[in-house]
Image 1 (tube, rainbow, N blue to C red):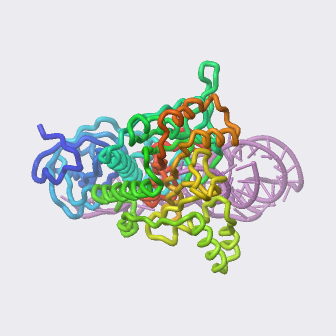
Image 2 (cartoon, rainbow, N blue to C red; image 1 turned 180 degrees about the vertical axis):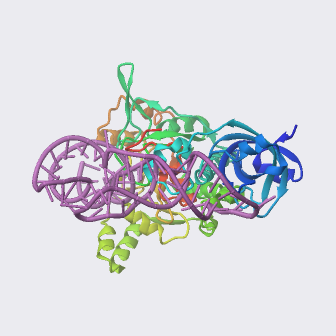
Image 3 (cartoon, rainbow, N blue to C red; image 1 turned 135 degrees about the vertical axis):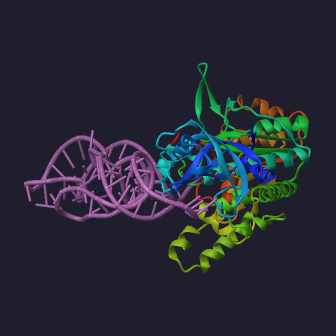
Length: 446
RNA sequence: UCCACAGUAGCUCAACGGCAGAGCAACCGGCUGUUAACCGGUGGGUUCCAGGUUCGAAUCCUGGCUGUGGAGCCA
């Protein structure tokens, strides 16, 4: 009985008789010769059936296989540079035995082009496609690398609830649900709970889905996204920027080490990834506004001039973020935003309360904001006053206000959007490919 | 919520006021080295829905539905 192997390990089995279990990715019919691409989730291998090498029934089966039929193939591993579709490339299996598990019905996703709507309707099948396979493998490594770095640097993962009694920030729209006759909301951030946990464990993070019910319909928005949120006691804004750039540099280097095949499949420009190394540029909001004004003045395109229009105090739109990020070859931090356009809990800058100790990280190539964070207000009177000002219910935040009574300390934290980071690292046109099953304004199926 | 565009065979599209078509996929046949193979053949339609204009509507008009791209908001 041949040994069952993973296709990813095929190089270790040259000359041996092996068994591969998987699905028919593609088949080329050459008469007495059949080229069958079999994928098993770990890779793809070209399996060759030659009529004189097997009994009639087996060859008949091989020559009838439909796309995505499930099969168990046994045969001898050979090196062949013509096996270009194989992953890893250059290996093929000369079929001796072939067991059909199920002959697939006509498969909707052909090797030709398809539209977005069709592919998203068939997302449960689309994930089998090579490009999606590559992206989702990179996503998994990104998630692992990010949490691994935090784990290795003294952070404790402390999970925060998804069902919550109140908003975590005053600005965004929440999904509300019925909680035994009372209203509850799907968490939009774990941050407030992180602040409680940070006081118990010092350095913590949470990694879970966050939910935003905003009617956003852009290439950067999901209703449900995976949110990585570290929070650290006594950390300053500057130290936090150090953490962010170390964390991302590490994650990108892990992906470059591990996923050469996948990056080649999605045709990612590796030069763009190689420059993702600490330190990243750091500019103030003030400077960013000046840069935008200068850009708007320089450009001859009236439309672009209009898009880049900005006055101090206004938040950046997506054209602004793109224009700023384009000036750098790696992500750029923009810090000290106006307090008025940021969340209520952000610490004002000493002697300049109109701006706060906040920082966003803008990815290059127009991918926009991938992290946002700040030092949090730790003075009990000030946080109380901010809650008063924006008019949110004090009862719902009583526990949060408690944190400022019992050993309050300066602290900071940030949130990173996993899908936006995947989209940027993979150079994707839209965030919908960066998550297995995207939840969007017009889509919750499949 | 606003702006723009689109909806025709399983898929990607053409036909733009006058017989609804092609490529791919499927099915049948041929081929020993294919790489989105190639060659020959077969089947495949409520032209998103409802009204209207017209001798005649996939095509023009009105309304609706669905989707896509962008804006705002955000990670």
